[in-house]
Amino acid sequence: MKRIVILLLSLMGVALTSSAQTFTQHLRQQQTGKGKITITQTKEIDNLVNGNVSETVSPQQKTPAQPVKTAPQTVKTTPQSDRTAKSDSLQKLRDRQKAEEEKKKQAEKANEDRRAIEEAIAMQKRATEKAADEKAAEEKRQAAERSAAEKRAAEEAAEDELHIPTVDMRKKVMRGAHKVTGYRVQAFAGGNTRADKIKAQQAGNAIKMRFPDQPIYVHFYSPRWICRVGNYRTLGEAEQMLHSVKALGYKSAIIVKGKITVFN
Image (cartoon, rainbow, N blue to C red; front, side, top):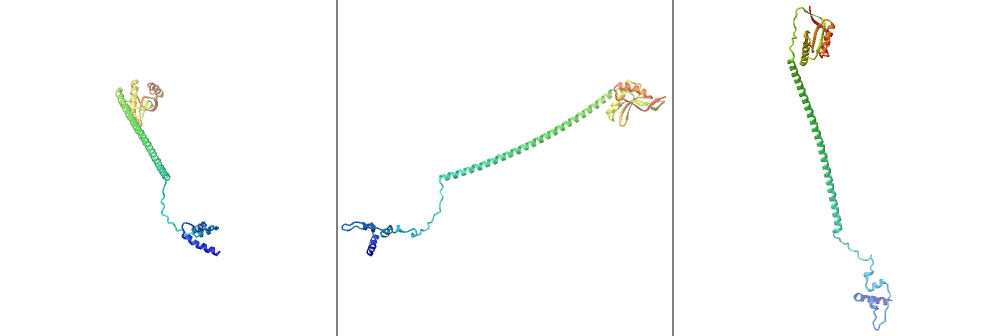
């Protein structure tokens, strides 16, 4: 047994210097005039004998690997990722443009609403001013019409006064006349204006022309102008004259009691 081991060890040295064949292959070669050798061994012994040491080294016996220094990695984008990024950028740009357009539309709508409100206020103001101007013009026109009417009435009254027949109604001092209580017919009673004075005079003149023998009294008894007719001692006489005065158109004529002038 020892011989075999020694032989194997010597042959192993030869095998280490041989690069063409392993020791086991060398033994298995048949040479002329020599016998045939049969070798049975495990894989571990075969590796040990034939020099395949690297194959028998266990993972634990391997030399620890040196840490590999990694260079900074540069991320390379693929065309697909470029397209995705570009699509996202375009979508964001469209969203931003859409938001800006929406904001612009809202601002334009706000401006339109403000202009509409301003126009409505201006229109209402113009309508108010127009109504005020029309009212002022109407008042001015009415005032002018009233003034013209008063002027025409005054002119007509003056013209009528010029055409009234002259009747002497001045007080005359008569001998034997004295005052007693009696009755007179009041044909007209107006106000204190010049027009009322003219109407009182016109009534007296009309009655005087119809009854020239009857005395006519046109006086201003504050606060009105009045026209009275006659001097009647009895109520019957006054009633007869009252009917005659009303027949002339003075429907508001009345009988008044007071001092009258009589003659002896």
